[in-house]
Length: 379
Image (cartoon, rainbow, N blue to C red; front, side, top):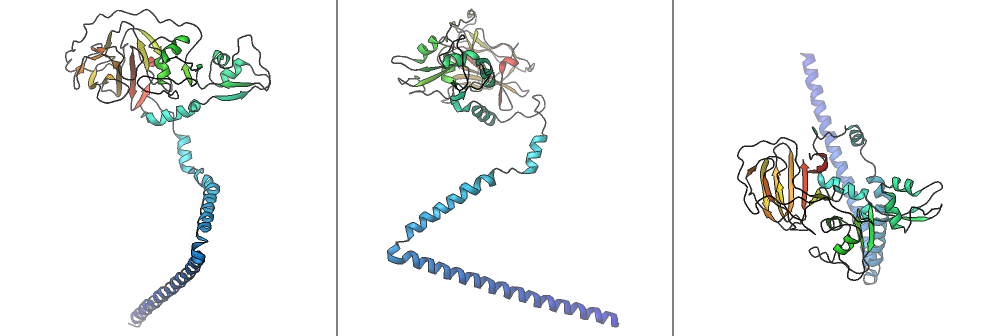
């Protein structure tokens, strides 16, 4: 009994002590808070009195110096705070395996596109200072260019010699940079550097070229145009294949079909523009136009010109196996949305609708939002 009474007495005393401690903490915090608040009010009143002196004479200097101080802190401390990535995140990124196109999800298209634009310096032309022992070939290899690109941009020939300290202009891609003269058009510029009407599309697609009008591609005298893959020799396309398909006839629905997972050539003609960082597709041109075929069996998800994009008349096929193909710039579409087509079915006719400089097919292969190189798949 005595032990029980002693335990009850100890417990009661504990509660009394806790209540007293809580009361003390509450009083202490209240007094400290009131003290800080009173100090703040006093400081604020003094600051306001200073700013009010002589009708706000010191208000503007105060705001100016405050802004300068804040800017200084952002400039000096901001980069150090933002440039320290989380160590766990850094280790996770370093430990991640190489993506497999067969099993891993493809990277976001717009993110990869932005990375590649940075890779090509946003179209910037840089100056390279020649070092001891360097040659045109070694400099071209360093920047991933052909020696001819450096020759043309710097008015050199294969017999020219370079010396240490010499400055060379380095283009972001292979080709020729052209200064527009009076009366020139993108077609005359393209022809000058070996591009025919369809290949001129490369000048339009290069993202750092600018035009007065995105429909007529008007030029300004004195502006510079990058002509990707332009050369100073004549370039000829392979012989064209005649159109053997009845124009304008709708292709019947194929019913239940399954994609084979491999792709056939969607059109006859020559490749006028290959896959690149600014052109995630291939262009196939045929002066006689001709039919466009489904590269593999699939479901038509887009047919026509549903928006104002530069694709013009187009067909998009979902092959049901993770792959999607797009066929653009058609003159006529010969399928409808929701229809199923077999591999090799005619889905339209080659044309030049949308953002196009001549009759050709713009062909894309997509997987998980990423645009892949069609030449790696076509048979």
